[in-house]
Image (tube, rainbow, N blue to C red):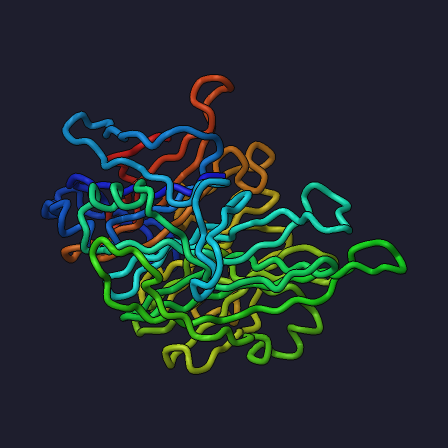
Length: 424
């Protein structure tokens, strides 16, 4: 899969009703509420990481311009950050030759100081003597770095240049009879630091059984610090400390009931009081996925994993803060997309019926959100306006446009208000 980034524009102003209090119930507001002030593109983009949105995109082809459906502006180009079998990845520490990866997956994007970091799994095919499947392989965590201060055309020029390189953040230790997959990079940026969760699942070859067996799992926390960005000298701009296992911070009760903890993927959040919150995913004893949180109130010195978990057999947890102290988890389940809320930092979760209702899907039409996939979802306050931004992935009929992606921008965080969109 290609990993692409694109920038999106700010929405136009509209009058709207206020809806959804903290309970998620609907109440009517005044139709003549004051119109929001216009937001300049420059202020909007700098306030929310240039609104860079990492997209998983199947297929091939060159990056192209994306036009607004409003007819009054053109969105910036999208650009391929990681290209399978083409993008060179510098090894950890810069020692040794740069190599390509068979594929990239599970993108995550974060900003620390003036450095924007795009993270992903970088997969390598196993070519040893115990190859039992064409899908057997290992993965490390790779990153591409760009300056948040650069204009979008400069970023496009840098990423498409012959000198563009990805960098290895965390390597998997592999051998002929041992493989490790580093999974689901999940990141949060605060000040000049990046907090990164990475799952680690290992297998080893049992010569007696002539089969690969589970060798163990772990979940690592890495903290990176942004260095000074040197124009024209793209390099490893985040200094990463050694990984630390998060397993000792997980209560023993959880570890006896759940296994294979990984980050939930994508991005975590920083709440209004400065708490760092990560979505987590684990498997129960029956092998079904469940989702929970990990959070830190002391900037990463210690971590709490509360006892509340989502329903089983759901996928793709996305976390946002909705009003002060109220967390929402959006997940795709076999019976459709659901929204759950917690007022106690993940100790308990209840279904928030009616909240973010436009994101919901129905089963059996869209089990696990299929054909109507929700990508990233974030909140932002821009010039005093509360916004929700998310990516929605849908399908056109076969043969028309393949699998497009679209940006949607929502004002006031209450009702959908599509101002600009882009299809890929």
